[in-house]
Image (cartoon, rainbow, N blue to C red; front, side):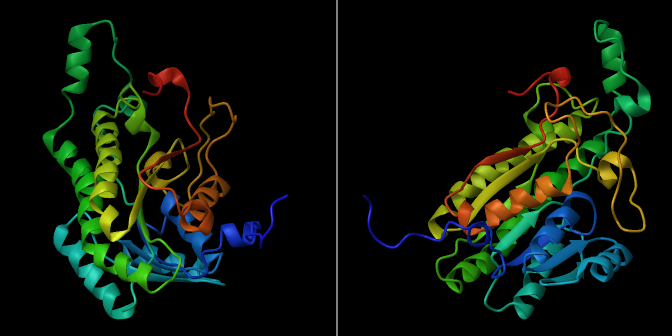
Length: 297
């Protein structure tokens, strides 16, 4: 029979984030808000960033209710200069560093080729396929990559010293970057007519693997959450007065429902809590979609 003092395996110990100071980009709506709420509801201090000050302020007003705290910082994380500025600003507020950076901010600019907007071409007709996907513009590709990949890169690199400080100031804790990618980045199909978006998410997932390797010697972990279909401004087109969105899409996944707040909350609490300390360079999928769009690689 084993002897010795048992570790605390209670859920409250494994998923405790009350010691965490986090930064969540795009944290005022959609999946970012789900992550923000999960962290602050369990005692974390959460800085949220976004381009719209009024949306940030509304999230603070409605959801910074304790036991943690939500603090709004306006900024456009798609720009290198803004990533550096945000890191410097938070350093003045948190000289002991932060323990978690969630790169959640993302856009989808495939308006010209998205099937829901434009219909699907006859996929057996080469001319129809060519004409449909040539409607995509260079600017749409560049904007999508700039936010979804370049932004995550510069935010991660700019915040690395703060993450290292956060690890050093919290004995027994391992700081990390969590990049919110998408299941679209692992699908063989064009994400219902969104090749720029799907390509950007595949790039973001691989970027995360590279960052996990680059950061390993300073002991900062990097992981990826790859959601399926969740309600957000990106998928629903808008948010309500509560900064949340609704979808009426009929799900075709085995769970028989869309992604919910509890799914995202459980994932981030697992990664950020003691139960996820050994997780590094991993892809965590949430609410996988059906195989109708080509299946997973």
